[in-house]
Length: 385
Image (tube, rainbow, N blue to C red; front, side, top):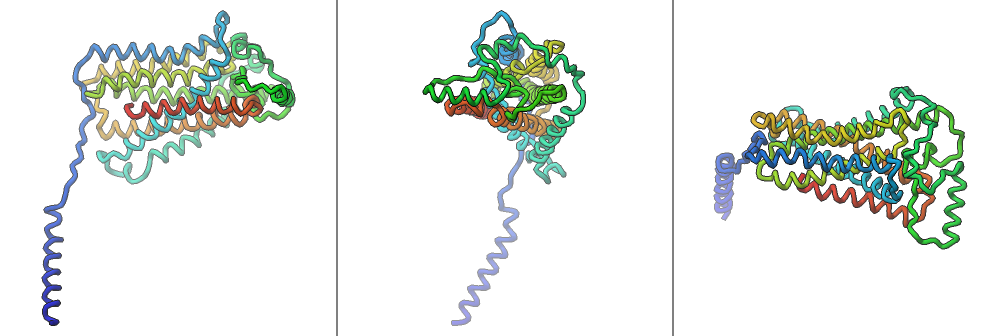
């Protein structure tokens, strides 16, 4: 009886050895198709039309808020800017995570890449380093005169901001704001009284709501922080717009869907940038700057589409070199917009804004709902672009 188990055990060992030897020959193999990503299939007329359609959408999103805010002859409800401001903040945050950071992970972890670039999560690492660099830049900008700023310019009143502050006078002390809030509560006012001061920095120069003396240095620090935040935001959205324009130029079967989605994408993103440019406190000598920044954003994608069409026969969006370039710049842009969206926009607007801190719960939830709506729309658009 002991011979039978031994024989069975020997047979099983032989079969296992045979299976292990045959496994490499009969096992599954995965083939990665690393094409160039250039699926250009003609339709030149439609592709050329995308240049002008996206340009118009981008101009509407970025320039319209600036014109409405700074046009002295136009009457605009401050509530519209309130909605646009917080909706735009949500758009920027949604773009950072869903349209930049996620594609950066995909690009830098592509199976078509090999070498050291695949040994580390460079998308997250570059994004993290960018956030620290952005904070350092803003810290230095608040201490050194990088913008040729004159103290007298900051004190000068800008009549274009009257449209945003209509019917609202900034109180010299936050105590008056609190008392006003208490009086509203005592009167039983349940209406949605949105704050009309939507300028940047939120709540004026005193972000923390502490009563203090406003010196020239304080005014300059606020101006420098404002300028740095706006230029950082502009840099992030422009680089992102350039790459998506190149992608659209040589898209294949998905061109029609991508075309439609990018029209909305660029319009909403432009609204996020334009609302910030419109509500910023620009000195009179730099009154032209918000228009220039808005136009710079608006032409970035159309110009990149035109360039993509010009090199349509040689452009290779799916090549290893292009994947690395896209992944690195998407990571940098993601870090810029994450820092701007969470620190400059959400934290300053909700935590350091005396209006929002003293506003009722309905106003705060309404603002948060606008942020969520903008972020949600960009998350939905990320399904296609």
